[in-house]
Amino acid sequence: MLHDPRPSRRSTPIWRPRRVLVTASALAHRHGRSIAERAEAIGIAVERLRSDRLPVDRGEDARKAYARAKSTLAVVVAPPSKLRLQPIAPSADWRVDLAEGCPAHCSYCYLAGSLKGPPITRVYANLDEIVAALPAYLGQGAVTSRSAERAAEGTTFEASCYTDPLAIEPVTGSLSALISSFGRWEAPVQLRFTTKFASVDPLLDLDHRGRTRMRASLNPAAFARFEGGTSRVAERLQALRRMAEAGYPIGLTIAPIIAADGWQDAYGGLIGDIAAVLGDLPATADPTVELITHRYTPGSKAVLDSWYPGSDLDMSGAHRREKRTRFGAVKQVYDAPTMGALKRFFETEIAARLPAMRILYWT
Image 1: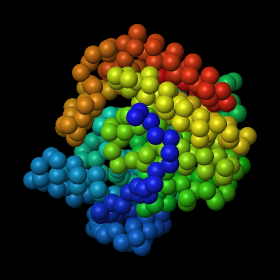
Image 2: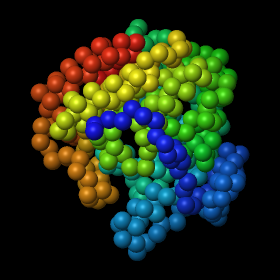
Image 3: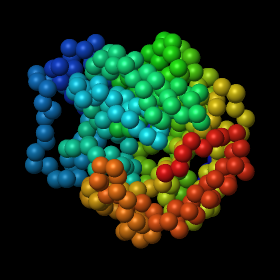
Image 4: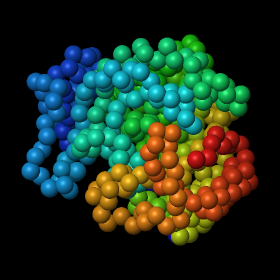
């Protein structure tokens, strides 16, 4: 069976790090202290460090080091560079980071080649400084701020580039704080985040004023083996519906699109499941779709091969071509025939079965 439209009978996974490290500088910030208190309140061990250096576990084999890092949350202070926002086309005008790192175990993770050191999730304590930096970017972006097609979204800020903010929300509270901040910001702006998790309860009653869009990152159940530690797709769809009913605009991030054997049936089943759950939404939902095909770099492939040696995700280079970014980096994307077949399929299926959803971009 390729897809399962039924809601899960098990509880949605909520990440509980085995340890929380809080740097000395992070403790100087109210939000940093709040995260430490939240963690202790739910029974997680918190280590308050005397300096800003995170302890490094030396002598462990690679697998143990990976597992230990993935189960660690570090509360740190975002460096000044994080307060100078970067554009993040084609998703949004600007990238705003609440954290770096993700507790999920996705064997295609693009962060693998982007972040240095062990895959510890680092959440930022100086949230007030991050929020204070945002108004300077109002109306200055090139993706939605100056786009006729997406102008109604206002200036957009993407919070999911280097983390899954909903995954860490039960411990950090950072996403709720940012959503509330955007709710108070009387300006044409929109916060955006995408997630593979479904624990939306803390967000439903926030005074968001429609200025935050949640998107669910989706792949067919047939490819669930590539998304370890995440909520089931049926749970993500139900969470998205609950957010729409709470007045949030919503969207889908179908990503990464994987051209494995049987992909037409798998993604056809997924689109059917989406239509069944999200076919009748409030007008405020304004549902959107973002379509992102699988790609990898030599660096990310090497890291992922070491993290997930048993994965059968195809990164052999078959049906691929090299693509260079504007910074000169090389990544492997699908070749033209494969890319064309994928694009035609999704555009046709979405138009026929999800007619209320507008496609924002294909990449």
